[in-house]
Image (cartoon, rainbow, N blue to C red; front, side, top):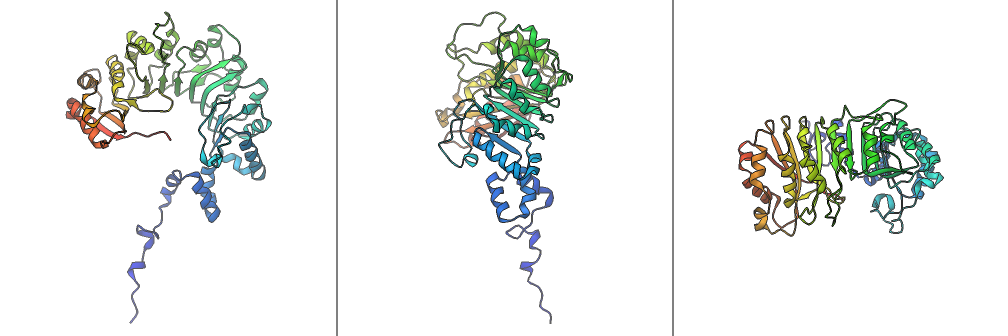
Length: 432
């Protein structure tokens, strides 16, 4: 009589456990969430991992040290095929202190201050070799005329992030962007400057030799009084007619109680009105707004009814204006209410709020915060938002109470939204 096979060892590939296999269609999604150092370790142990992991290992380069650029140049000299795998570059310059990536710095505490990278030939050489980039991020970079050639091969860039970047002249800034005709997402943080003063009409009259740059997504952080930059965006160099995503954050002048001069926010207001046809809007909410520390920009935008122009938006997200924090404090929902009160958005179907419950708030005080919950509830169920279907609170809880308890507290304060089954809760992502 033939012995039956042990069923415990049959079809192990279809069972959950050490012997189970991963469906091929899920592998790309899974590998994207594996840490780079783990992918490197797997590749060293099993060469079969190389083909899968290399596009993810070499996809993004974060550079702030010349020594990093030297090592990458040596690697690409030895393995030139790896160059086509690099799709994102984040370059940090200046002499600022930045938090280090432990994977990239090997935990060294001696490499925490960066230098002016663009003055180093090895940096320029590395950048000029990267012709397959889709994303380029420059932070605290001062460019010289002869250094602009390092970016001439980046014609495939689609996402450009500029933060504290200084160009030799406005014409050089135009030439820089002309080399990237495929840009669809552009982000400015703390402005882009060029040497020498110029009239506001000069940037507005600039024309791209390859035709206007058609933007689909625009992020403006702390540029509300940058006259030259705002004039450039409003001019013929960019085409904002196809814009569908807008993210804006304005400056808070801490301790300055003097009202701004008339016309201070005129260009900022004009730009927002020009972009009022967007579908997805993200607004920053300033922290700690008090009578002694007013938010003049928000006051101006509310008074001039700028927010009422966003009649095409479908989703609006509120977040914090701090560089180290995405979530707003519970008490800052007052500013959210002011914005929503000034709106009339017939297509808006989703509102997202990233909120943080501070450790300074006791559990039994959560419902007693100075938040106009009733007004908030009434506005969102009014005729101003007939299409509203979801109000999502992304909560970051920093108290002993559980996240579910915070959700119950907010639910109890918003009975009208609850009756329409609009409220949803999720965990807010925290910055590392």
